[in-house]
Amino acid sequence: YGLALKTANFFQMIPVAIVAVFGVRLGRKDLGSEKKPLLQLSILMLAVCCFQAMLGEFWGRELLLLISRGKLLPAEVEPVFKVFRLQMMGVLILCMTHPLTTFLSARARLEQIFLWVNLPWLIMSAAIYGLLATNPLSAAEANIWVYLAYAILILIAGRKAWTTQSGF
Image 1 (spheres, rainbow, N blue to C red):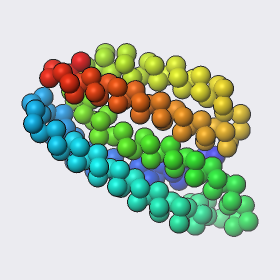
Image 2 (image 1 turned 60 degrees about the vertical axis):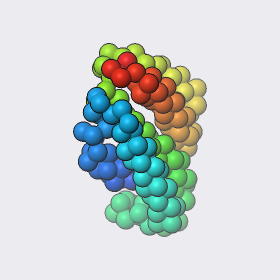
Image 3 (image 1 turned 90 degrees about the vertical axis):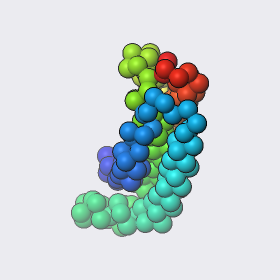
Image 4 (image 1 turned 135 degrees about the vertical axis):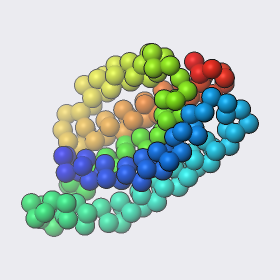
């Protein structure tokens, strides 16, 4: 599980770097008619995430063997790859939220982000992991549901912040 998670998290590097470049612009209070860059960045992030998913699918097994530095034999890679594949899905969902998360971080009050996103996500995550995570494979599946819950909460908060000029 740990190896699969660490390997899947490598795929966050490019989306995080892309968002960091555009973070200041995304957070400007006077976006007004300039909402187009956020949409363009979101589309770019989706394309990057799809490309990374393709890379993970094609070279994931080899990457797992490389990162394990000989601790994982080729015959043992398939169960780890199943967990990796699920972890990748969660990471890609999370990466697609980065533009909106950056926008919210600059535009909304931290207390509101905590109340609208972080606190509900904490409660939902505890419930999801408590109910679903019984082994490494089910924990990886639970990650997908946890990241989907985060994405939905971010979308709701983002819509609220987007429609009000002063944040929410």
